[in-house]
Amino acid sequence: MNLENVIAVRKNKTVYRDGDRTIKVFDANYSKADVLNEALNQARIEETGLNIPKVLEVTMVEGKWAIVSEYISGKTLSQLMEENKEKKDEYLELLVNIQLEVQSKTCPLLNKLKDKMNRKISESKLDATTRYDLHTRLEGMPKHNKVCHGDFNPSNIIIREDGTPFILDWSHATQGNASADAARTYLLFWLQGDVEAATKYLDLFCKKSDTAKQYVQKWMPIVAASQSVKGNEDEKELLLTWANVVDYE
Image 1 (cartoon, one colour):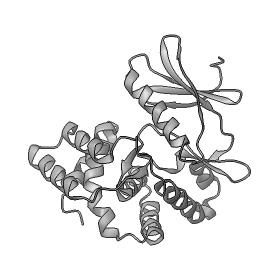
Image 2 (cartoon, rainbow, N blue to C red):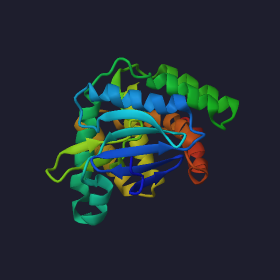
Image 3 (cartoon, rainbow, N blue to C red):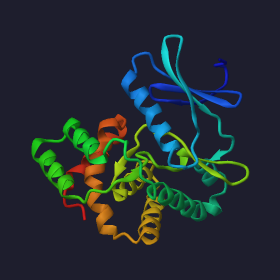
Image 4 (tube, helix red, strand yellow):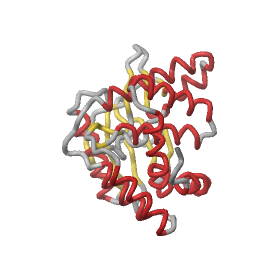
C-alpha cells in the first residue's frame, strides 16, 4: 500500500492515491464506530445505483483505520467553478440536478436524519430554551425517507473527463427530508462566503423540486444547530446565530 501521493488533507484524516485506489487514513484517535459506519453508508449507497466510488476494503494502516475505495479521475465541481467562472450558473444547475437524483433514491437501512438532528441539537452550545424550540420544530417537520447526503457541496462532486459525475464522502448520509439537505447545502455556500451562489442554488433547488422556499428556510435553524457541533470555531458563531433565529422565515 503506497502512501506517498497525498491528494487531500481533512480534519482527522488524510487521503492518498495508490494507482486506481484511494486510501482514506483516519487519525489514530478517530472513532472505530464512525469509520465502520462511513464504510457501511458507502456500501449501502452503492446499492442504490448512484455513481459513487465503490468500497474495496476497510483495513488498518500503521495502527490507524483506513477505507480503501475506487479512485475516480477528474475534477471536482468546485475546481471547475473556479476555473470557468463564466459557467458557474451552469455548474450550479448541474449540482442541483445531481442532488435531486440522490434524493430520488431510498435506502431503508441508513440512519434517520431526524434522529441525528435531535442528537446534534442536544450536543450544541445553545441554551436550553433554544434547544427546546429547535427540538419542537424538528418534531413538527414532515417525515420523509429520501437519501440525504449530509455534506452536499461542489467539492464532493467529481466530474470525469467523459462528463459523468461521481458523488464522494458519504460519512454523513441519512434518510429523511430532502429540504433539510438543501438547507445544509445553502448554509455551506454561506459559510464559504459565497452568498450569491447560496441564493442562486436555493432558487434553483426550489424551482426544480417544486418546493416552497419558506419550507426549506424552516429547516435552516435546525441544520445550523446541527452543523455547529461539527463546524470549526470560525464557523460556530455564525451558525449559532442562525440557530438562534428560530423564526428565521
